[in-house]
Image 1 (tube, helix red, strand yellow):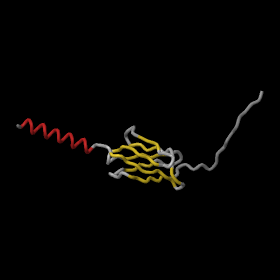
Image 2 (tube, helix red, strand yellow):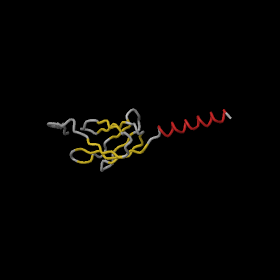
Image 3 (cartoon, one colour):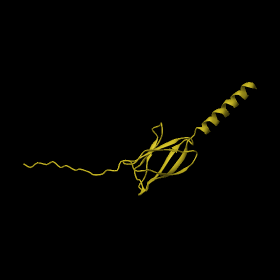
Image 4 (spheres, helix red, strand yellow):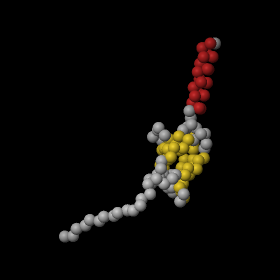
Length: 111
């Protein structure tokens, strides 16, 4: 009888731990002051689990409720966003490196 109770206890414990650490689907949109950012990268910090935003800046990723999402896009500051159990996020990135000027140099030759 004691062995059965011990087995039941450990089974319940494993199921509880599995439910607590299970991932949820987090979705949202990545934008800037100028509108949505297509192709922005959203990664669960500390893992290789990541996605890119679609043409409208939307994303969907599986992440634990206590995860931190690392959001980046070329020319914008990388932002760490805590999930905090939310399932829908709106993330606005700020510009980082605004170029003052661009110099284009062309080299060519003829025969």
